[in-house]
Length: 240
Image 1 (cartoon, rainbow, N blue to C red):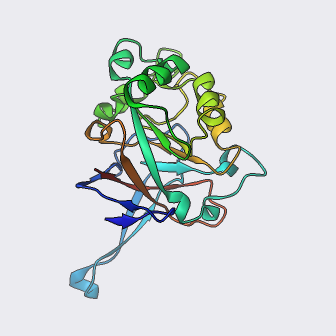
Image 2 (spheres, rainbow, N blue to C red; image 1 turned 180 degrees about the vertical axis):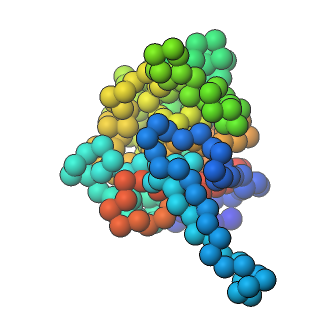
Image 3 (cartoon, helix red, strand yellow; image 1 turned 45 degrees about the vertical axis):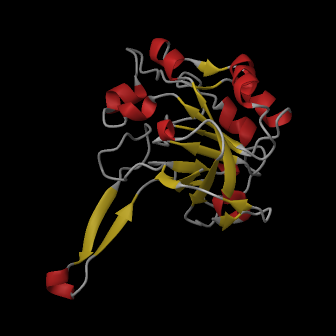
């Protein structure tokens, strides 16, 4: 049991990793720098083992910062500690995404969820379980490019994003694909809408199928990179 930013007790029975393991073979967004590990010291020669690693700020499971899409936006180092412990709900669109990989969450989807589980309270992160985490080990399937190189994977529709931001005052979004925007949207509309304020955008999550529709608390670990456009993230889910 822990105390949240609002000083109420959070009870949980399980803790689940929502971050993928980082290695050199994971899917990388076109143009992102490669992931590299270099051995600096070994037990045999130095008495301890140490590596240097290099990766982009938006590689692996990561969080985006406002300055990645807005020139006046803050960097990831400006996120407060309390903003990184947040309640979350999960909307499951796996069935729709399996049939139509370009599926974008709609306002109707949100309202159907609320009919089952109740109105989404302000301050929650909305996680979208698309089933795409199952494609993580297959780069071609994960990005699902067509002959023209256009990516096809599901995400949040812009109307649903505006509804969640303005009518439900959510704290942010998260998804198991490489973008909260559907793969075809090269304008990054959803990212831009959410990051107009220092809200949360989490991408490349995993294990969302292990979370209940409501009641989960997220603990989001970041690297406090000065003026960072984002950061690889260690995301833990506290499940009731």
